Length: 212
Image (cartoon, rainbow, N blue to C red):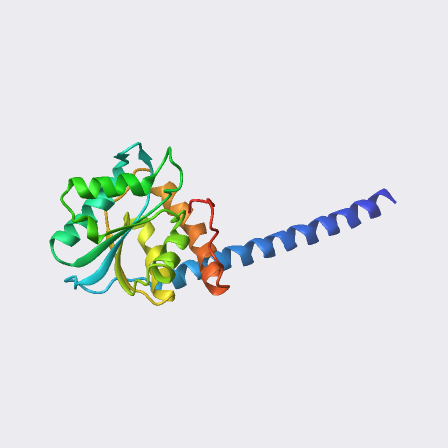
């Protein structure tokens, strides 16, 4: 009786393990396939760069009016594109709704200090994440062509989203980041998340959400 019960228990355990392995494989396959789709459809156009209407600068952390290293690099890249007459306007998108913490305010002040005309600067205070930033660029600001500026790990997803919603977009890298493996792993999951947000036409939250 005990042996028979053990045999049944082992059989059930074997079925559960097989089921979990199958589910894990399916999930991994979904992430891998969606990442591959995003990657293959986000390659940049060949050099040299040609003029576009906007540079879209994706937000990052600030300390008062001081930009973090990654955000400073992004803004410097956008300013360089403007000075080379490769963009006509700069859209700076990030978290700017808190009076005590505003990425977009700090970004704009940095641009003005670097002698960029105020009339070509646009701030989107509700660019809480990459998906929201790109959709709002199209739907709120009617942007049809743009260079998207971020660190290299981030550009694949941002450029793919932009092209999927009808923006003639290319990415311009603002260098690499420390802890590259962490950010690359993070992007592996974020690309799949945004892939399905695009497929199902998810409306971005009009409030702070996950900063991916």
